[in-house]
Each structure stands twice: as structure tokens, then as C-alpha cells.
Amino acid sequence: MKVLIITRTQGRTGRMMEHKREVEGDWIRVGRAASSEIFLPDPRVALFQGLIGYRKGLIYSEGESGIVGSSSTTQKSVMSVRLAPGVSIDAGPYKITSLEPPEGFDGALAVELVRPAEVVPEGDIRDRSSRRSLASLGLPKRVASWSLLALIVVLFFLVPAGRVLELPWRNATGEALGLTDKVWNPGAVILAHQPIEQKCESCHEVAFEHVKDRACLTCHMAIQHHVGPELKPAALFEGQRCGTCHRDHKGVKATHRDDDMLCTSCHRDIRATSPASTAANVSNFATNHPAFRLSLPGEGGVRRVRQGQGVIVETSNLVFPHAVHMDPKGVRSPTQGRMTLQCSSCHGPDASKRTFEPINMRKHCQECHQLQFEPAVTTREVPHGSARDAKVVVEEFYANLALNGVRDSFEKAFGVPGEGLLRRVGEPSESERKTAANLAATKAGKVATELFEVRVCRTCHEVRRVEEGKSVDWRVAAVRANNAWMPKARFEHRSHAQSKCADCHDVAASKKSSDVAMPNIETCRKCHGGGEPVANKITSNCMQCHGFHGSGHLWDPTFKKPATRVVEGAGIGR
View 1: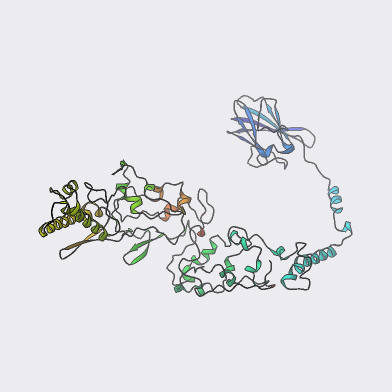
View 2: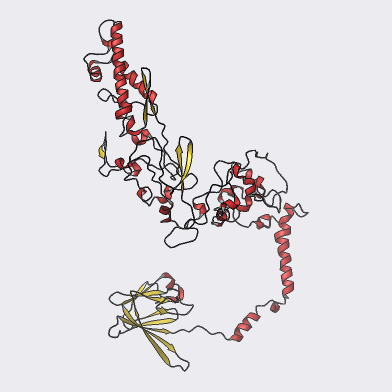
């Protein structure tokens, strides 16, 4: 829309002057803000008083800030007014009148200040201020100041200190007046400390002294080092106490700082602080942070590998192609036909909703990967987890079938006519016993070989055949499925539930179990910035992903909780 704005002002001589200008746009802003197209420089006008738009004519719309009290547009609670020619609205002390628009314009508005601000003569201000001075009350400033100071010292120091320091007036009426040492409390304690909020002596063992570490360790006995003993933490933090970083009475949420400086003061140049450290320098997640390190279980234990230094391979001893299981055409299920799997089909959140439950054969795999070994006769399956137990189940099944099997199951299992030895008429001969035993052993051997090497176990596992004389066994490689790729970092999947799994873990084309699909730092930086706010990024400081205290190094393993004791007058509160 195109609108002609006519601003009318009165000159010193009383003559009315007009200033005209053209404004084009979808909206015309009205208010005290300098960005407003209709600028009304008066403190009685809201910063954003309202908007003028075009809907088959001009319409003025006003927000809540513009209709409060006496500065209402029309002296009644309306949200919009149609500005037909001749209609006026009040915006604070200004009147805005709609005029007949000239040719080529969608509208015309006249703006005029109709209620100028009150001008107070200088003499009146001086008279008002003089009537409110201490001198007018007969109180000299020096006497009043010292008297007030003395009153504050008595009421808020000497009276509360009476009980703490066992002064003669410790049993005076200060507590009845509410003038106990509670008045010294600088603020609320954190939520975890609120059960002892009224027992100041729990932490403040000695009056007017810093809280000692032993007071903290009374409850926090399991607190742990930031680094391991090999880096000599006592030397790193010499002279530091718990209260250096953990300050209570600063709010209910936390007792520590959460800005990057708490961490980067050392980690900006970590070798200068701890020459033996294996960590890399870091000062800001967005601009100076090393690539992530992944923890990979292997034969020799867990090794940590930094991303970006070559292809990372996982040795889980599993055969698992994601590409097959994530096929858009679906996979065949013995019970449900063809079904399409999603990430959530196998990966379910644990109770904390922060990470996922470990993959479990019975819960996640066995519906499709059934362990049946003689489906023509029974739905029984071999147990999962022990190759020896699975082999014994197969041997016992066919031995029992050779002795007690009915004709139908016997013939289906062994492929020869007959029935179990003990079901036949008469006492079986020694030759018949040997024949039945050999029949069962031969069948069990063939089925076990097929089970381990062809049809079932080898589908997912690394299987090795072991022959000792005439005996044959199988060894299934231990599964090293990783469920903690970055144990040094805090990460909650619950906080990322609005994202798709594939945004961070692209496994649709993965054909090998050795593929690692963990996100790298560039993936995280798409959404997360550093410690300073940046447009369209989540401000992310160090403490968002990292904690301070380690997970395996007790602060003081020899510390023993002291016996409960009562110390009269030792605290600074009750």
C-alpha cells in the first residue's frame, strides 16, 4: 500500500505547519520506537503502539500495550479500527485522522499532537525538592547517617551474633523479633540442600569462616577427581576447596558456574597445566574444539580413537548389515510376513530416556531369527548364548527321539520308517541299541553342523569349528556390541527427539557390521554453536556435554564420615 503521512506541528508564532511524506509497505508501524513509520516521540506513547494495514481500506490494529489505561485508542477496549475518511483515533497525546486519499495513494493520514506534555517551571521543582530534604526536618545529614549506621549494626549484627558468639544477650528477644542470624542468609540454597536449609551448622561448622571440605565430604563421600591420580590432581588443584567452585545461596538450580571460562582457563592450553594430559586444547565448541573420540571395545580392552584420522572400524564379531534390515521393501518375518523395520524396531530408549537399551536377542532378534532345529517335528529352539548348551540340546533331543519317538515324528526326523527303540515289542538287543545310538548321534551331528555353520548361528555370528579327535565343537566369538561410544560426554537422545535418527546416524547404505555411523563434530555444529549466542544456533557451553568430576577416581578413598556430634554455638544459624 502507498500512504501519504501529513505531520502537523505548531510553530513559535502559532502558525500551523505541515510536513508531508510518502510511505510504502505492507504495514505502517505507529509508536515511540525510532523504527516506526509514524514516529510519535512522547513518553506517553508505547514503543510499539499499533499497526496500520490495508484491507479494502486502512485499518488500525492495536496491541495490548496500546489499550492500557487512559491511553486507549478509543477509550474502550478494542483491538482494531477501520480508518474511513474523517475517522480519528487517539494514540497517547496524538490524534491520527484519516483523510480522503489523493490520486495514486491508498490512504492519507494527518498526525497532530493535541495534548502537549506539562512544562513544570524550574522554580517549582526547586521548591518541591527543598521541602523533602533532611534539613527541612531538622536532621543534619551527618547525624542521621551515623545514627542509621549504628541502628543497622545493632539490629543486624550484634543482636544476631549474640547466640553464635555466646555473647551476654544471646537469650534476648532478638529471635522473637525475627532478628536471628537468618538475616545474614544471602539467598536461597539449591534444591538438594533445602532439607538442611534451616541447619546452617551442617555446613558452616565455624562462625565467620569458609565452609571446610570436610563438611562437604560428610554427605558427598563418593565425589571423584576430575582426573586420574597419574596426573597428580592434588598438585593441579592445590589451594582449591569445594567452595571455590561450588557456591551455595546463589539460587535453587546449581552451585557452580556454567560458562566456558570455568573449563577453558585450563583447557585452552592444557599442557601448560598438566604436561601428562592426553586431551587436546579447546576454547570454544564452535571454533576450537577437537574431533570427537570414540571408545571401541577390542581384544585388548577399550581403545579410544579420534574421528577424522582415517576409517574407524568396529570389531563387534557380529554379522549385521543395516542395509538389509532397513530395506524399504521390507524383510520377511516367519510370523508376520514381509515387514518394514524402523530404527525404533530394535533401538528402544532405556528408563532414563537418555540412551538406548542394549540389543537383546530374545527381545529384538528372535522373532525373525528363530533357533528351531527340527521344525518338521517340534517348535523347540536351542538356547541362545552358549554353543555347548545348544549342542547338548540337539543331542538330547535326537537321542530321546531314537528311544521314545512315535512313528510319525521318528520318520520325519530320521527319514527312515520305524519308531523309538523302547516303543518296539520285546527287549531291544545290544545291536539294536547301538544302531539307535548311532542313528541319533549321526542326525544330531548333521543338524548341529547345519545349525552352526549354515543356517542359523553363522547368519549373525563369527563361528569357528573345533575338532578334537572324533569330537566336534563350535566356538562363537564373544559379541562386543558397543553401547557407550562417547562415555566422556553427556548426551540425551530425549532432547533430540524432534530430529530423525538418520540426521545423525546414516546407516541405510551400510552393508557391514564394522561400519561406524556415529556423528562427527561437524554434524553437531549444524545446530550447536559455542558459548556465545549466535543466530539460528543453540548456545552450547562446555558443561552442556561434559561434567567436571570423573567417573573412576575417588576424591579421598580413606575419608570416613565423622561420628554425629552436637557443637553448641558453632554454627551461624539454626
